Structure formats: structure tokens, C-alpha cells
Image 1 (cartoon, rainbow, N blue to C red):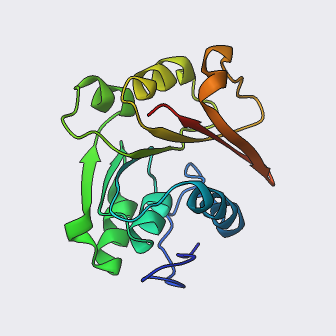
Image 2 (image 1 turned 180 degrees about the vertical axis):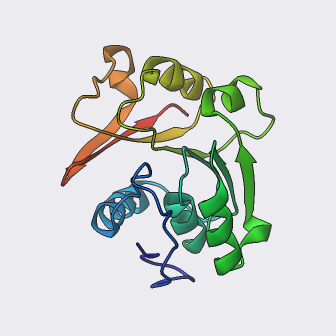
Length: 174
């Protein structure tokens, strides 16, 4: 797992020593960012990386010019190591929290983009999507084939892309 592009291009990120975390593959991440950067300018944006794990997606965005990323997860050990290794502490804030709890705090920061990569067996997609849609932002949701898209968000749907076993759905709630 490495940074694909930007100022930290080719830097290898640390992975946790557990199989409970499923970092986005380089191939899937490269495809996602190619599609995102064709539609959105990442330069100077504020973003959330929810269920961040290694911080792979948020760190890629920082490497490509994002101003600040808020990394949120219940286990933040690996993302902290990667932030330190890349020396991007000024562009990063790590929050150890359950994601819905974090979002329910009515966080004062309003992100331009939200990466969200919950465990594939996550049961609270409707609550999660509703909360993020209320934030008037762009949502990049990573999910399994079992995820059912909610019809009420079909007008905000930007694209759906499958890369190997990974699915990305992007909504524009802004």
C-alpha cells in the first residue's frame, strides 16, 4: 500500500498487523482518485476520512493538495504512525471515536469531501448516509456488493465504480 500521486508519491504506508482492517488496494485507490480528480478539485479542501484505518485515502488526498484531513476511527494507532512517517501532522487531526458518535456531535468543521470506508458488515449505512447528506458535502462511500443504494439519494449519485471486490459510490450532497 503506497501513496499513488502528489508530493508523497511512491511512499509506502504502514499496515496494521491484523486482518480486521481492509486497506483500499493501490489499484482501487488509483482508479477512485482518477475519477474524483476529473470531477473535483482536491486542492485546498477539508475532508473527513471516516473508518480511516491506515489513513490511506485521506493521506492520498493530502499528498494531492488537500489542506486538512480529520481521521476518525476507534483504533487510530496505524494512521498516527503513517501521519508521523509522512510528516503531515499540520494537515492532519486524528480523532479516536465511533463514527456516528463523532458525526452526532454536530462537529463544527464542515468538510468539502468525506471518505467513508466502514467494515463490510456495517449495519448502520442508512443513518450514516443521512447524517453525511445533512452536511452538504461530497461522500465517497466504499462498500461490498451487498450494499443497497437508497433510492432517495439517486439524484445526488455521481458515479458507482467497481474495482475488483471493492465498490465506490460517490454522492454530491453539496
